[in-house]
Length: 207
Image 1 (cartoon, rainbow, N blue to C red):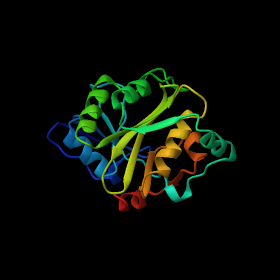
Image 2: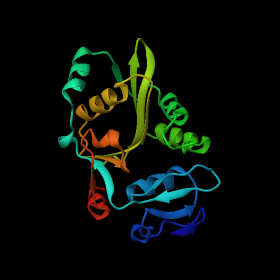
Image 3: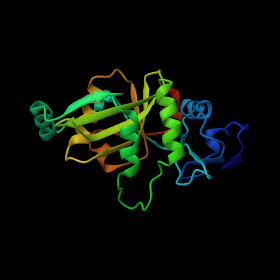
Image 4: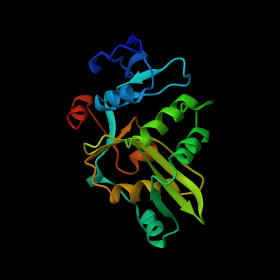
């Protein structure tokens, strides 16, 4: 793990700690953020004054061809209870993700600085949002980074209605041509949809 300033690049990812922490410091400029994702690194922290950069091994990913859709979710999708859009309201999605309460967390890692930085990436065409609507209200969504190389790096999702975020995620994957979805770290929710661990070295080959 290395301390970096605004002018220093990231160290090699094999220098990350056992839990994946690679570096502390730097900034959230578009250039640094894109360089991070292109090298298998992502920011995850709770204080804009202490930026933490991660590259875990193994890496939790989903191959779209292995996406699992349960019978009950197929029924939800057939009933068309939700309308799913892409890039209709990125700021609303990331803001709702920041406000979403998560088990075991007292505060959000999506800080004001993160919201501003990712809105900038969205304006530049690299950050993408998926919105899920019900009765014209935003009830779920997700956002992430599109590296334009067939890899989508998922960042966060929220839901206010049962099955809404799953419906958005599944619809997005089924209507995209990504070769890999980067889920970063393990969650039960994503494992149920088919996500799995691969080695960091294997993950880097897709970038």
